[in-house]
Amino acid sequence: MALLLRRGAALAARSFRAAAAASSASAAAHRLPAAGSLAGAGELAPARLFLLDSRRGFAKGKKSKDDRGDTVQAAPDIGPTVKSTATAQMDAAVIALSRELSKLRTGRATPGMLDHIMVETADVKVALNRIAVVSVLDAHTLSVMPYDPSSMKSIEHAIISSPLGINPTPDGNRIIANIPPLTKENIQALCKVVTKSAEDFKQSIRRARQKALDTIKKSASSMPKDDAKRLEKEIEELTKKFIKSADDMCKAKEKEISGS
Image 1 (cartoon, rainbow, N blue to C red):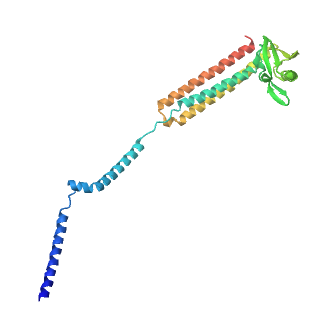
Image 2 (cartoon, rainbow, N blue to C red; image 1 turned 180 degrees about the horizontal axis):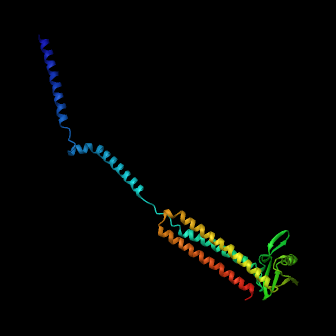
Image 3 (cartoon, helix red, strand yellow; image 1 turned 120 degrees about the horizontal axis):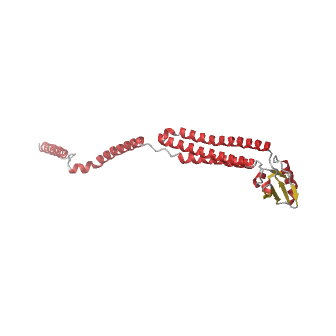
């Protein structure tokens, strides 16, 4: 009987302890901090901050993307490049025309009239003005002084073979070249050559103009319409300037040829 009583007491004690433990757990569950409470904020802060940062990062990224999509980059200004290129090409045409006109013989002696003559020395052709000094003695006479006296014969032969119609004569260490007066037929023929040369090189100027206008046309969609028109007008003015320069040069040459 005593044994049974002791076992019953032990079972009762265990039941009591289990009930107390359950009651404590329930009370602890009811005491968990609320989401809005200060303690709750302290414990849930890392999770909330993570969510907030994620949302903010997503929002910022979206805005940045939208900003990039809405941004329109300004097109580069092609004006200076187009004008400088056209100017260089037109200027090169005028310089070439001047060089070509200098080769034409006139009734007046000029040092440049022999520049285009090529002299053959040691199986190599060299421009006369590279191996001799050409100077004007008077209105109708040139002096040619070779750097190397041994090249005199070659220089003399080259001058005779040129289309200038000059018959040079040796004079010690130099060559004297008398420039004969032009006949009426010579003058007319030379003026025709001047006119043709002028037209050829003016075509080069117009080609440079067309290239510039084509470049402007290709870039018209990326630049304001007023800027494109202004640039086209500047190219046209540039073309007129160089065409006039070529015309003036040819008129001066014709005047020089005719002797008037």
